[in-house]
Length: 103
Image: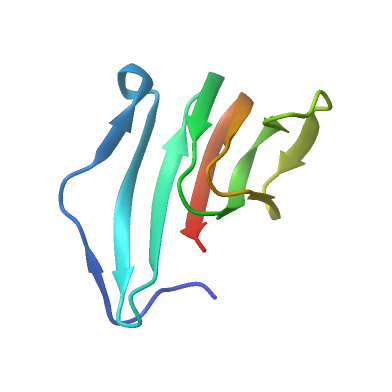
């Protein structure tokens, strides 16, 4: 899917890590929410409430889920799931364009 149709976009940006990670919230008619964002190269740790699907549109990064020691490499065109009420770490090596879906 190239476009999202019939959505609302929250005007205020979500800005994290001194501006190195930013996103916009997109709300769908069915109540689902996604964020569309960009992460600059760096290392980041995020906490989750709901489970998440992270779809990497472009760029390259590694992630490690809470309780794990193994890092997983992903790049544009790939995705990974994150459990709810948890956390994950990222090492972004190339600017990453992403979509985060809250499940």
